[in-house]
Length: 180
Image (cartoon, rainbow, N blue to C red):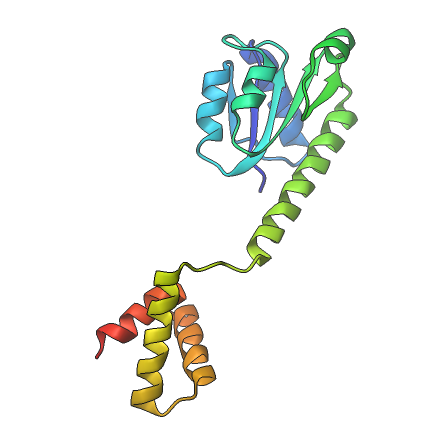
């Protein structure tokens, strides 16, 4: 699920947008009236979408965008003049009065992009530092010496037991080393 934060100066406007999104199958994580509140919610998550008006109670949308964590997308709803003159880079603008299908399709597109980024991030191989690699190597050496395993067998043993126990390989290797 994508984290969606709705922020408008008037709480009624924020609730209306939330209701539209909920009716169209999106979960809204938070509804707020200030940039500070939106940033507070955003700091709890790695990524998501902020849907905001141009002017919040304490800042403009450009300032909010600058302070959002890296994985957040931003959609601003404002008049066509404001969108043409004022929007910064990395902000998607939707002209008022809002068309429901434009809002829904924009949020859906951004949500799919976030899901794709998450998937790429998960598929990226994890890089271990030297200390972690040394712990794993020592555990493999111990398994090879004590159980007549090949290096490949020792590696598979650590992988399998880390998956079975719900731990990462370094933790599993530390357990093996602790059983000397």
